[in-house]
Length: 409
Image 1 (cartoon, rainbow, N blue to C red):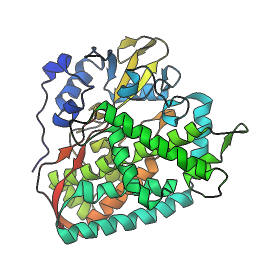
Image 2 (image 1 turned 135 degrees about the vertical axis):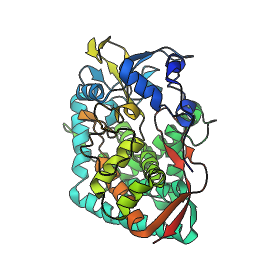
Image 3 (image 1 turned 45 degrees about the vertical axis):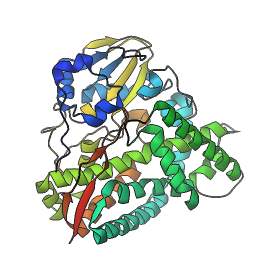
Image 4 (image 1 turned 180 degrees about the vertical axis):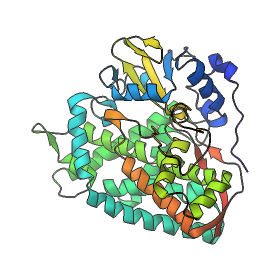
């Protein structure tokens, strides 16, 4: 059973509302992206309802040029449509994703220093064991929802390990994390999302205060006791960056893991190549990242007039880079519409590029590698037994629920 969605007519691009979660969850935009890449690589998305207009960038090369240039394309007014279209982000100057310049460099260095090779080695062993255990349980049952029963269990557990969140609190954090950026139901509202985000922030305020002066090696403790230029980080900086880890590493990795299983089921020749060891694990991970592209877009605000994609952007304009298009740009990827586990080179932009390249990229790769390895070693066959369910969001995209029958080797 395929996840094929109704394809939107590219001739209707002028009436398309890219801010609508329903558009992304219930339609295939491939033809629209092809039309924009071909005819309108810099496209002006007109105002819709209460939202102002914004620029849409769809080609890979143009996306790179925006991501490289944090001087003319700033993140400090927000980095996703939800915040950019209202003109501000409450985390500006506090959370790495919406901070530029020297402060971004300084806080990023603190977090990077904490993510040592030893930490990643420890996490890798834990993740591999957890994935194999979850896969074994799924095989015992046969029928399972891969999104809920396997993929949802791994990323948050890893992040909570890094933050030393108590086990009893983890289901609460998972529920809030998913709700703050997306929904598995179309009725989810912006109010629901903001309520969830505020509850997460309140939780980490309390945790950070508890750990000031502590000696633990978890990231909350490290941030709570770090200083920049002789001054400690503010509580708001600590909690926003804890939230950022959940935002960037929980639902996105779940979508990539679940999307990988669906792609293997729908491309049996690639599944066989993986099983036979003909497709290398490293290249397979990169192709899954490209193919699933869990973060659909990233945004910036232009600080001065600039030429991109054959057009002119003015200072103060909102600019959105659509990774869901750039990762399928035929100018960069041969046979871009095919899922090819041995694809090389593979310069996908799933983790962005430049100063804001995702800090969790290595962790995401470790989790996907563990998933593909467990599938290769433990699973003989994958059969999709029900309709895949997609996430409702204009920021995140992909399959969140996937009923499957897994057959043991």
